[in-house]
Length: 247
Image (tube, rainbow, N blue to C red):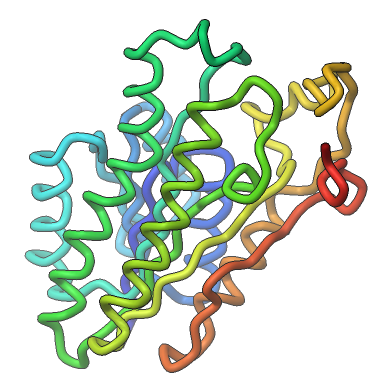
Protein backbone atom coordinates (compact mmCIF):
# COMPACT_ATOMS: atom_id res chain seq x y z
CA UNK A 1 0.00 0.00 0.00
CA UNK A 2 1.37 3.38 -1.01
CA UNK A 3 1.89 5.73 1.89
CA UNK A 4 0.34 9.21 1.76
CA UNK A 5 2.16 12.36 2.88
CA UNK A 6 1.05 15.98 3.09
CA UNK A 7 3.68 18.73 2.88
CA UNK A 8 2.56 22.28 3.63
CA UNK A 9 4.48 25.21 2.22
CA UNK A 10 5.70 22.72 -0.32
CA UNK A 11 6.10 24.71 -3.52
CA UNK A 12 9.64 25.96 -2.85
CA UNK A 13 12.64 25.81 -0.53
CA UNK A 14 12.63 23.31 2.32
CA UNK A 15 9.05 22.25 1.63
CA UNK A 16 9.71 21.38 -1.99
CA UNK A 17 12.94 19.55 -1.10
CA UNK A 18 11.02 17.52 1.49
CA UNK A 19 8.18 16.75 -0.91
CA UNK A 20 10.64 15.61 -3.56
CA UNK A 21 12.49 13.46 -1.02
CA UNK A 22 9.33 11.76 0.20
CA UNK A 23 8.29 11.15 -3.41
CA UNK A 24 11.66 9.49 -4.05
CA UNK A 25 11.14 6.98 -1.22
CA UNK A 26 7.72 5.94 -2.49
CA UNK A 27 5.21 8.28 -0.90
CA UNK A 28 2.31 9.78 -2.75
CA UNK A 29 2.74 13.43 -1.80
CA UNK A 30 0.03 16.07 -1.51
CA UNK A 31 1.77 19.45 -1.73
CA UNK A 32 -0.10 22.44 -0.33
CA UNK A 33 0.83 26.09 -0.87
CA UNK A 34 -0.86 29.40 -1.55
CA UNK A 35 0.68 30.18 -4.93
CA UNK A 36 -0.89 28.18 -7.76
CA UNK A 37 1.76 29.10 -10.32
CA UNK A 38 4.59 27.92 -8.07
CA UNK A 39 2.73 24.70 -7.34
CA UNK A 40 2.18 23.94 -11.01
CA UNK A 41 5.83 24.59 -11.81
CA UNK A 42 7.14 22.32 -9.06
CA UNK A 43 4.69 19.52 -9.95
CA UNK A 44 5.58 19.49 -13.64
CA UNK A 45 8.48 17.03 -13.30
CA UNK A 46 6.59 14.42 -11.29
CA UNK A 47 3.86 11.85 -11.85
CA UNK A 48 0.46 13.55 -11.39
CA UNK A 49 -0.80 10.43 -9.61
CA UNK A 50 1.86 10.67 -6.90
CA UNK A 51 2.67 14.39 -6.68
CA UNK A 52 -0.54 16.30 -6.14
CA UNK A 53 -0.55 20.11 -5.84
CA UNK A 54 -3.36 21.74 -3.85
CA UNK A 55 -3.81 25.49 -3.41
CA UNK A 56 -4.52 26.23 0.24
CA UNK A 57 -3.77 28.82 2.90
CA UNK A 58 -3.14 26.60 5.91
CA UNK A 59 -3.54 29.47 8.37
CA UNK A 60 -7.21 29.53 7.34
CA UNK A 61 -9.25 26.95 9.27
CA UNK A 62 -11.90 26.48 6.58
CA UNK A 63 -9.28 25.86 3.91
CA UNK A 64 -7.41 23.41 6.16
CA UNK A 65 -10.59 21.42 6.82
CA UNK A 66 -11.29 21.35 3.08
CA UNK A 67 -7.72 20.22 2.34
CA UNK A 68 -7.95 17.27 4.69
CA UNK A 69 -11.39 16.36 3.41
CA UNK A 70 -9.89 16.13 -0.08
CA UNK A 71 -7.20 13.80 1.23
CA UNK A 72 -9.74 11.61 3.02
CA UNK A 73 -12.02 11.47 -0.04
CA UNK A 74 -9.20 10.57 -2.42
CA UNK A 75 -6.98 8.30 -0.30
CA UNK A 76 -8.88 7.44 2.87
CA UNK A 77 -5.77 7.86 5.00
CA UNK A 78 -2.71 9.98 5.83
CA UNK A 79 0.59 8.50 6.94
CA UNK A 80 2.79 11.58 7.31
CA UNK A 81 2.36 15.32 7.73
CA UNK A 82 5.30 17.69 7.32
CA UNK A 83 4.22 21.04 8.72
CA UNK A 84 6.46 23.46 6.88
CA UNK A 85 4.31 26.50 6.13
CA UNK A 86 5.71 29.58 7.80
CA UNK A 87 6.80 33.18 7.61
CA UNK A 88 9.40 35.54 8.99
CA UNK A 89 9.58 39.25 9.73
CA UNK A 90 12.19 41.96 9.15
CA UNK A 91 14.79 42.50 11.86
CA UNK A 92 13.31 44.90 14.42
CA UNK A 93 13.67 45.69 18.09
CA UNK A 94 10.68 44.57 20.17
CA UNK A 95 9.26 48.06 20.59
CA UNK A 96 9.32 48.55 16.81
CA UNK A 97 7.20 45.47 16.01
CA UNK A 98 3.60 46.24 14.98
CA UNK A 99 1.05 43.92 16.55
CA UNK A 100 -0.26 43.08 13.08
CA UNK A 101 3.18 41.79 12.13
CA UNK A 102 3.33 39.70 15.32
CA UNK A 103 -0.04 38.16 14.48
CA UNK A 104 0.96 37.48 10.86
CA UNK A 105 4.04 35.52 11.95
CA UNK A 106 2.10 33.54 14.57
CA UNK A 107 -0.68 32.77 12.09
CA UNK A 108 1.85 31.38 9.63
CA UNK A 109 4.15 29.56 12.04
CA UNK A 110 1.97 28.44 14.96
CA UNK A 111 -1.68 28.55 14.03
CA UNK A 112 -1.15 26.78 10.69
CA UNK A 113 0.88 24.08 12.44
CA UNK A 114 -1.88 23.60 15.01
CA UNK A 115 -4.70 23.54 12.44
CA UNK A 116 -2.99 20.97 10.20
CA UNK A 117 -1.91 18.79 13.12
CA UNK A 118 -5.44 18.87 14.51
CA UNK A 119 -6.96 17.60 11.25
CA UNK A 120 -4.15 15.09 10.67
CA UNK A 121 -4.68 13.60 14.11
CA UNK A 122 -8.38 13.10 13.37
CA UNK A 123 -7.50 11.16 10.21
CA UNK A 124 -4.71 9.15 11.83
CA UNK A 125 -6.84 8.16 14.81
CA UNK A 126 -9.69 6.94 12.62
CA UNK A 127 -7.76 5.03 9.97
CA UNK A 128 -6.85 1.34 9.97
CA UNK A 129 -4.15 0.63 10.87
CA UNK A 130 -4.27 3.50 13.31
CA UNK A 131 -1.45 6.02 13.55
CA UNK A 132 0.97 8.10 11.54
CA UNK A 133 3.80 10.60 11.83
CA UNK A 134 3.81 14.40 12.17
CA UNK A 135 7.01 16.37 11.62
CA UNK A 136 7.05 20.08 12.43
CA UNK A 137 9.59 22.51 11.00
CA UNK A 138 10.69 24.35 14.12
CA UNK A 139 13.97 26.02 13.08
CA UNK A 140 17.16 26.66 15.05
CA UNK A 141 15.26 29.65 16.47
CA UNK A 142 13.16 27.21 18.48
CA UNK A 143 16.33 26.72 20.55
CA UNK A 144 18.24 30.00 20.40
CA UNK A 145 17.10 33.40 19.11
CA UNK A 146 18.74 35.67 16.63
CA UNK A 147 19.01 39.35 17.43
CA UNK A 148 15.88 41.36 16.58
CA UNK A 149 13.68 38.35 15.69
CA UNK A 150 11.18 38.24 18.56
CA UNK A 151 8.07 37.25 16.53
CA UNK A 152 9.83 34.45 14.68
CA UNK A 153 11.72 33.18 17.73
CA UNK A 154 8.65 33.22 19.99
CA UNK A 155 6.56 31.46 17.35
CA UNK A 156 9.13 28.72 16.87
CA UNK A 157 9.42 28.19 20.63
CA UNK A 158 5.64 27.74 20.57
CA UNK A 159 6.01 25.07 17.89
CA UNK A 160 8.28 23.13 20.26
CA UNK A 161 5.61 23.19 22.96
CA UNK A 162 3.01 22.04 20.46
CA UNK A 163 5.28 19.25 19.20
CA UNK A 164 5.81 17.90 22.70
CA UNK A 165 2.10 18.13 23.53
CA UNK A 166 1.11 16.25 20.38
CA UNK A 167 3.74 13.61 21.07
CA UNK A 168 2.45 13.10 24.61
CA UNK A 169 -1.27 13.31 23.86
CA UNK A 170 -1.20 11.09 20.76
CA UNK A 171 1.33 8.36 21.41
CA UNK A 172 -1.43 6.08 22.72
CA UNK A 173 -2.96 6.29 19.23
CA UNK A 174 0.29 5.24 17.50
CA UNK A 175 0.96 8.79 16.32
CA UNK A 176 4.59 9.93 16.50
CA UNK A 177 5.28 13.66 16.50
CA UNK A 178 8.69 15.27 16.29
CA UNK A 179 10.33 18.39 14.95
CA UNK A 180 13.34 19.30 12.87
CA UNK A 181 15.38 22.34 13.87
CA UNK A 182 16.98 23.63 10.68
CA UNK A 183 19.89 26.05 10.62
CA UNK A 184 21.05 27.84 7.47
CA UNK A 185 19.63 25.68 4.69
CA UNK A 186 20.18 27.58 1.46
CA UNK A 187 16.96 28.64 -0.25
CA UNK A 188 15.87 31.75 -2.11
CA UNK A 189 14.60 33.14 1.20
CA UNK A 190 17.68 32.37 3.27
CA UNK A 191 20.54 33.15 0.89
CA UNK A 192 20.67 36.67 2.39
CA UNK A 193 22.74 35.04 5.14
CA UNK A 194 25.66 34.80 2.73
CA UNK A 195 25.55 38.60 2.49
CA UNK A 196 25.32 39.14 6.23
CA UNK A 197 22.90 38.88 9.15
CA UNK A 198 22.86 40.17 12.70
CA UNK A 199 25.07 38.39 15.22
CA UNK A 200 24.51 38.35 18.99
CA UNK A 201 26.97 41.21 19.54
CA UNK A 202 25.14 43.45 17.07
CA UNK A 203 27.62 43.00 14.23
CA UNK A 204 26.59 41.83 10.78
CA UNK A 205 28.42 38.88 9.26
CA UNK A 206 27.95 36.42 6.43
CA UNK A 207 27.16 32.87 7.51
CA UNK A 208 27.87 29.46 6.06
CA UNK A 209 24.99 27.62 4.43
CA UNK A 210 24.14 23.97 3.77
CA UNK A 211 22.41 22.34 0.83
CA UNK A 212 18.65 22.15 1.28
CA UNK A 213 18.74 18.58 -0.07
CA UNK A 214 20.58 17.57 3.11
CA UNK A 215 17.51 18.66 5.07
CA UNK A 216 15.39 16.46 2.82
CA UNK A 217 17.67 13.51 3.62
CA UNK A 218 17.07 14.05 7.33
CA UNK A 219 13.31 14.18 6.82
CA UNK A 220 13.46 11.00 4.74
CA UNK A 221 15.32 9.28 7.58
CA UNK A 222 12.60 10.29 10.04
CA UNK A 223 9.89 9.19 7.62
CA UNK A 224 11.41 5.74 7.10
CA UNK A 225 11.59 4.87 10.79
CA UNK A 226 8.96 2.45 12.12
CA UNK A 227 6.09 4.25 13.81
CA UNK A 228 7.18 2.64 17.08
CA UNK A 229 10.21 4.98 17.01
CA UNK A 230 10.03 8.76 17.28
CA UNK A 231 12.64 11.46 16.72
CA UNK A 232 11.31 14.07 19.12
CA UNK A 233 13.84 16.70 18.03
CA UNK A 234 16.53 16.75 15.38
CA UNK A 235 18.89 19.68 14.83
CA UNK A 236 20.51 19.89 11.41
CA UNK A 237 22.65 22.84 10.43
CA UNK A 238 25.55 24.08 8.37
CA UNK A 239 28.60 22.80 10.22
CA UNK A 240 30.28 26.21 10.38
CA UNK A 241 27.25 28.32 11.20
CA UNK A 242 27.64 30.39 14.39
CA UNK A 243 25.15 28.48 16.51
CA UNK A 244 27.03 26.49 19.15
CA UNK A 245 28.24 29.11 21.60
CA UNK A 246 26.05 31.79 20.00
CA UNK A 247 25.59 34.81 22.25
